[in-house]
Image (cartoon, rainbow, N blue to C red):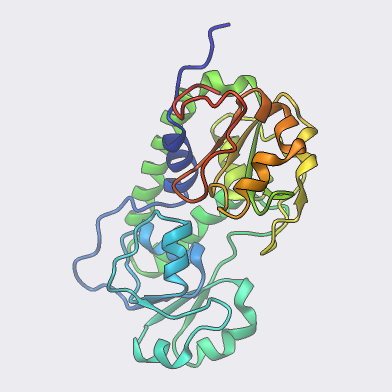
Length: 288
């Protein structure tokens, strides 16, 4: 069988996982833009996807570092933490609609006292998020009387998915772990109920992780769980934390993982420490 054609790691990570998580696909609204404030990141992405830039949103420093795309304009006011936003600042931005989700139901009464709240659930245990994300985007566009914006964004996304699916056809020979490295002994593994896992399915790739995603601020999965599918590839989507890189290089367990030993591990090194790729140190554009 012909080996998979080389595909740039960053193109795969950014194109398949980041840009398609509802990246902007519709021109920004020039006039009559409602004053939106986004508490929830998924709803922030939904607004940006249809060209409705919020006047305010939460945790923008971290969002720009973690999500990177879609781009949030510099003039969007940062409201602080998602779970406890600055309500006084929120009120000063004079929103006409606040975008939230059931994750923040605890603060919804305070949000509702400032402006109407639109709450949609994109992520939930056991539920594929892509259809929910499309539904949330569509609902928002309809509420803002711009249904054509959601249709345009969805069409662009599906075209991109189809192009990537065709490009990755030769990569269907192996399952793929998509993980986030927490430290030298733990990772966060993304299941079918994550956007990463859902994207693998839509791209025709097998997710090596058969469990559900553990929604947690810590990386709860022991590293040895990645030995369950020795034939797999491993993609680390947030790079390797600088504090974890030296320990991983010395880790007997890490270096004996078959995907690592055979050069089938890649990380997005824009976001973390370097090294720890594999024993044979392939170039970043080698096929895995």
